[in-house]
Image (cartoon, rainbow, N blue to C red; front, top):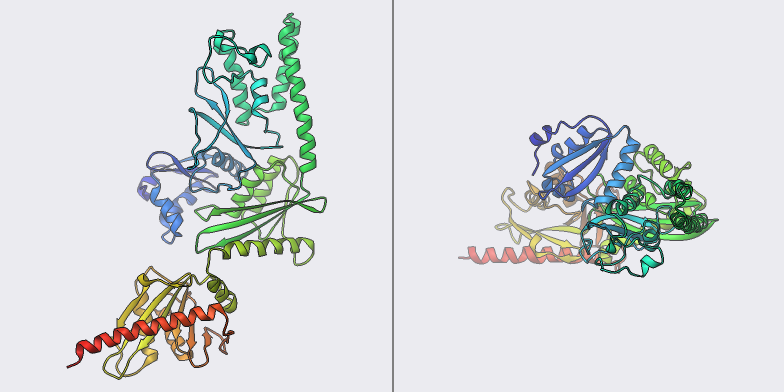
Length: 534
């Protein structure tokens, strides 16, 4: 694990750039960007209250490298390209990969071009080689493997045979198998292909270069070579015209993007709607882990930089961080002005964003029991009450007083979270003070915290519990009281209790937890009485 002391040895500059975090095997596990590399990277090791996933990332960091850029826009774009190239485990990876193609140039004396396929674990299969992509059908960088092989005369045979195959006779391969082409000449085509796949060159520039080669071949009388290049350029022109038409037909007028974060599970859900000529033409759903700098901005750049076309207007459910830098980065990729806008308070755009929000809410809720979701909605809780602790005091008579705390996780009892207490500091029957002691002792120095605390009792018991939570620095945890007489719910800061319908599944879950706390505490009380009975 890397420490702040070893980090200082790196002498990270206070400039914009990209940082690459490596694991113990020197593999890249996370790539991020920063306006100030020194400040951002140092914060990982200084900050103590990371979310669990980011804390796990920090524990796995063995080394850090960095690349300085001239400005934030270059950092945005470089980060996106490096993530696509290395696919680190902690970065955002678009799950909807059905429209992407990865290509591989093999590590062989006469390399081949293959479609790169993955195994179940996500690793690329087949012979060793450099993988490129993803490439999107319809984008200017996408070409079929077959056409790329023809353009650059790349062999297709698994092993070099001793006689030429059909591809040689139809002018698609120069037959390195019979030494009809030197390795140097063969690699010229491979290197040109690499330049295009890596983005150092373009199909357009390659076509211009081939025009000059064709003219030189014709000037020296090599008409067969000139004819081959002419035919290749003809095929390339046909493809470029078809791509241009597809791009024009597919270009969305507007893009609508909404995000919903499930903070408890550390996952962000994103939905994208594309509208062309006023009609919804496409819908995509993604999710990514909320780790380190995995943000809405990061997602938007990853998504749009891989899309066939970037629209001129992107309407988002919330303003992404560093919006100006993101807009300029997308403009640099798109070649035209891009505006990221809010939907406003009314109108069609607001209706579409609200539609996305409703759909995303359903995706979030799928991971929780219906009772948990209904309780959150009924009480307007700020977080999903997946983990609920319920407290009860059991003091039959005046000689023995005990208390209990039971835990429900996703609507069901979790016996590992049950606790029982013998009241220590309170004499006599003072339920309010006893509840305060139970809550304080349960969470004092505890990192295992619930989303909601429930007290068996009314306003007085609730006041004692909230005071105890504040005393141990946990005033942010929601706390309610469930009064048994009328099954009313008392909430912090509310003048009147809340009455839920008897068939409300959230209320039934609270009653189940309250009854379970009573049963567990009473059983403990009875066991102590048996021990102390003369």
